[in-house]
Image (cartoon, rainbow, N blue to C red; front, top):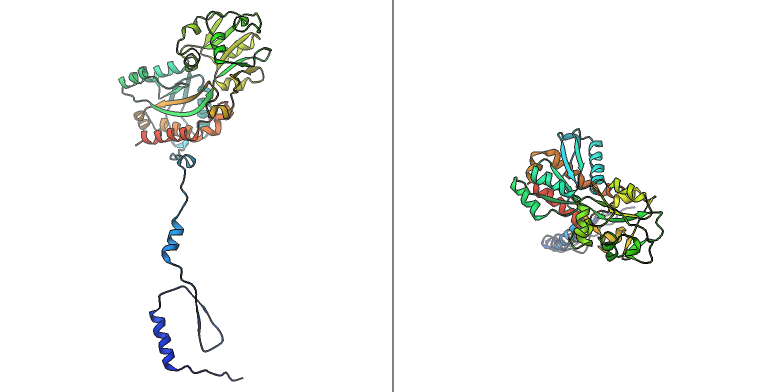
Length: 355
């Protein structure tokens, strides 16, 4: 069949070409048909500025949620020794992190001495023998001054949270909950028997097992329970002190009338035989520690110095490793993670120290 051609007047064609040349550029879709005439269909014009604005507009990112990132550390690339000492409370967490650091390739040694926070600060700030001080309390002004006297500026790294545990043997059948006022009497001078504290309790001698005076746990308990006056605590009868928390555990297990306190990890390790006491009706659980409702919750720290970190890559690498992976280990050890903001501050302190 012969195709018919429609002749379009030349003037119309010329005008169409002129309009096309003058028209603004646009996205077009061209459909080819079986014809000698092309049919052009124009689509709505989308303003370029509107497209660009839609592409770049992003929701705001919460820094606390995104986290402060540290450079990746490879333990295989590090050598030398890392020398640490201090808190018996921090000890099991530091030990776990050091074991993981070595398991992942660190060929040096991480030394961890459990001697109490105060003694740890002395080794770090007075003797200058250690690279890191482990602590269950913040460093004091006089300890900072001692550090500065030997050319060190202590940098604080928050690594977790402890709920100081007041515990009795599970054979104890009369204690489940105490108040802060009860604690001042139970662990204080002038109260010999349980009945002296509460007439409803047995007329049996209170056997007290407490950390040594170099311990940050001792310092924290005295500050919170005795308003910083340690004399009533130290003068209480039948009181045994030890820097070794495992000695305290064994003492408490020896009698249903014994009582003591230490870091939560030591309770968690012995929860089958020990019972932790609620304080003022508040239990030592994650929620109550996070919101500070548990009266004896406290931060855990490591301290170092920028010069040490810069001169000893293994020390900087170990601290980096701890701050990167501590939340993967801390609950299993028996403590509570620091909140994200506190951990981010510690990571930022590491970055600042390495500038």
